[in-house]
Amino acid sequence: MANKPIVMSKLKTLIRLHVESASKSKMARCTGMSRNTVKSYLQKIALLSLSGEELLNLQEQDLYKLLQEQVTQGSSDRLGDLYRFFRYMEKELKKPGVTRKLLWQEYIEQFPQGYQPSQFNHHFVRWRGTEKPSFKIEHKAGDKLYIDYMFDVSKK
Image (cartoon, rainbow, N blue to C red):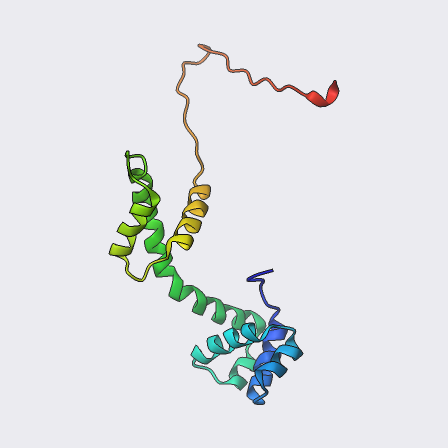
């Protein structure tokens, strides 16, 4: 499964092997991770301003927080800009002749380092799904009766 959270004990093993200058292949074998995952974590660890011994002495929760902060700091601004653009985009899509492709081009003009079309559409679909559509029915008490009939085919 892609992007499955890693067990912190595996990460500590990876850090220990890195301190011992083991090869990426050996790290991958010992932790059960792919070499690309090992490489990715080593890059994240290299960006931290802590030595291998300091990382090994951290509690698992603290290590997890450090890595999560690092991951979310880079993408939060870009994602925030994208979600703000979606509010504008939702209004624009109601106009005739306006497409997602046109709006993506407008988005890229405003944010040149923004998401490409596939991720842009993926995030838009996810964002739209989080909106909870509802409406308020205004009526006078006792004026109308609303009945919701349900047909049960299993009792035939």
